Every structure is written in C-alpha cells, then in structure tokens.
Image (cartoon, rainbow, N blue to C red):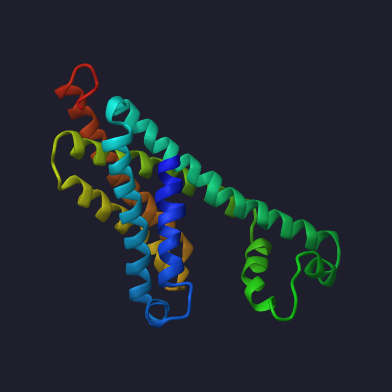
Length: 229
C-alpha cells in the first residue's frame, strides 16, 4: 500500500505538477496534443508504478520475498488505489447528488461553493454525478476488480524477473501497463467511448493474468518451497 502511495500519489503527481498543471511550454505541448497527452500519461503512470514495485520487492521485501508475498503486494497496491482514487470520487458524486436532490440548484450550488467564476470547472463533476447510476456503479466495481487482477499479475511478473535476474521482465511489465492505460487516456480526451475502454481493459487484464499464472507455476516448480529468492 505504501508502495502505491509513494510511487503513484506522491512522485507521479509531483511530476504532473511540474509538467501538466502549471502554464508553461511543456504543459501547453502535452495538453494541446492528444498523442502527447496519451504518451505522457501512460508513461508516467506505468514507469512510476512498475519501478516502485521493483524497488519495494528488491529492497524493502528482501527478507520476505516469495511468490505468495508478491501476490499480497499486488493486492495491497490495487486495494489502496480503490481507497485513494475511486472511493473519494464516489463520495463526491454522492454528496453532489444528495445536495441537488434535496433542494433547488441555486441552494446546491451555494452549498458546494460554486460561483460564477468556478462554475465552468465544477460543471464536469456535476454532470458526472447526474449521470452516475447503478449501471455506472457496477461498471466501476468491475473496473476495480480488473485493476486488482492487473496489479497482482504485474507484480508477479516483476517479481519473477527480479529473482530470476531477467532484466527484460520490468520493461515488459511497463509496456503491458502502458498498453492497458492507452485507451483510458484517449477516453479522457473524448477519442474513444467508455465501453471500448472497459473491453480493452478486460482483454489486457486476461493477457497479464495469463502471463503471471504461467510465471507463478514455473516459480513453484523451480522452488518447491514457494520461495525463489
């Protein structure tokens, strides 16, 4: 869990505050190009997260490095992502929905501190909350299940490459992760529909899990005790 918080929520977000949040030549280039935005977004997320896995497995878990603990690491990584990313969004949508259903729009806007100056920025969240129904909730749950499987599979792949001293496995994990994140990045730019993102994510997750299961079984064969460190 700490591995995700440090790599994805601290270091990666710190990079975003340098490259895409302020108004500078780099941010204007990235935000002004769909290709650049997709490449930057997928690269930063995947490099920080996969290198974070590698560092934790190599150094912090050095004395407790096993296939089982690699699986647990993936579960912790995916689990804290749900609490840190998805849960706050759902709570925000619920709060917005309750406020707008409880009174008129002006009262809700006042409660949410929405003014004429901030209305433009707040509108996407309000629209998202208005369209958030049971189907969308179910899709979010399914997406998180797939993400948990993805994180667990990628952790096993990175772990196997580390303990077998095969350096190619870390780049493989980065590329698989980038492939999975490509369509979500394009969806943020309005290029592809949401259903395509979900189908794409499911397909890549199946591929990652297939590779991870094969490496897990091979690791068990190579080490009857289940630890190949």
